[in-house]
Image (cartoon, rainbow, N blue to C red; front, side, top):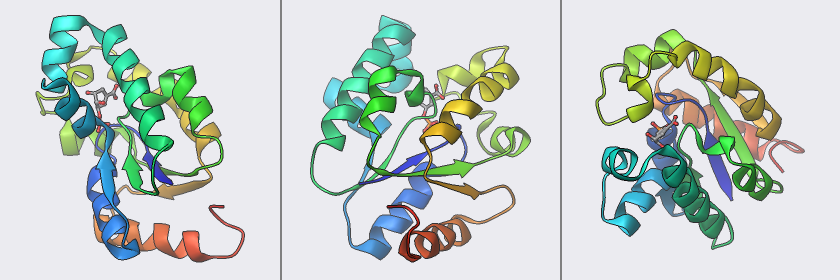
Length: 166
Ligand code: S3P
């Protein structure tokens, strides 16, 4: 399983789709799976049930999918906050799309469909997630200033290089 992780705005879904097409694998986006299974949008889940319930559903969805057939899977930016998700990532080809905060905010800062961006501590949130991202990643690919095509090409090159991404 190739799993894309990183902060909101890193381009996980866009790059994931490109990678899946090049590898001839299915693509799945954890947030889209959650929305389809719950019949609710992510903001509606946050608003109606709160973040802890969202994280419970998120972990369940991701761990189930990680046990399924080979896929390129992109995770929501906060998924690694849950121990079950971090544990389930062991043994998978986990790729961190490493975006600088300023670039992430340029890309998705005004997006009302991301409840975590409405908080007033986004820089602290960004900083607090970096360690878990790096601990989980087998491969770190910088994305700031690069197109999704360039990023996908870097990921592919690293995945086929011997000894990397196994
Ligand atoms: C979140 C990121 C979102 C989504 C939810 C929470 C987060 O996914 O899972 O809004 O906590 O960073 P993206 O990283 O795809 O925006």
